[in-house]
Length: 126
Image (cartoon, rainbow, N blue to C red; front, side):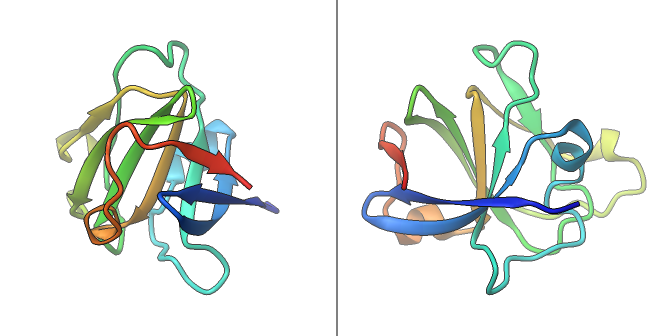
């Protein structure tokens, strides 16, 4: 599948971002992938039935730790920092990382702390 890309700006930092929006791609997420020269973040366009209620992500078969940024109404509503990969056979047993947002952005683990990105910050699509 061909992915679309967008640039996202948070706290004066730009992220070239891969967009995923169909259910299959959202479930796969960063499984077996890492950020490379083609993108620095992955944006999930919410497939959730109720984006105003908590939903979760897990790190099944991810290669690197990730920061999970939940975005609601153009602002960061929550951040799960440095979520480690899970290599358990059944994803049901992997830790789950909860938040509220109609959009979810994943970046390399430690990015938010290193760049001083915090809850409440504005997210711009440029």
